[in-house]
Length: 74
Image (cartoon, rainbow, N blue to C red; front, side, top):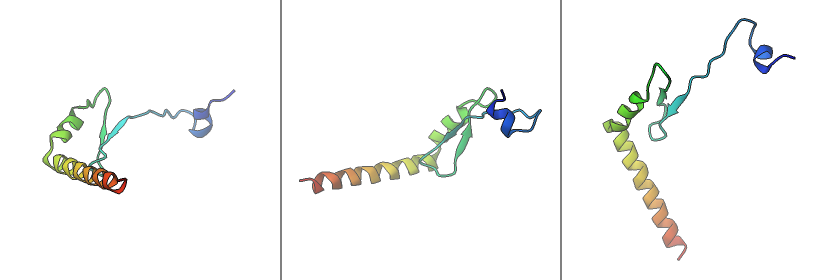
């Protein structure tokens, strides 16, 4: 019986899973998290001024939409 990886990949090739952390507040930002790449890069990104601005904008939009839903339901 052959496994999925044997049918898709050429013989001798090895596939590796590389986990990535995506920032939903900053489109296009992916950070590799693994043994050789710690989550320190992502933690540094969270302190970044651009990320903080994007986070505030999202929170303002969420608050405005939730306030609108409350008024709309009255």
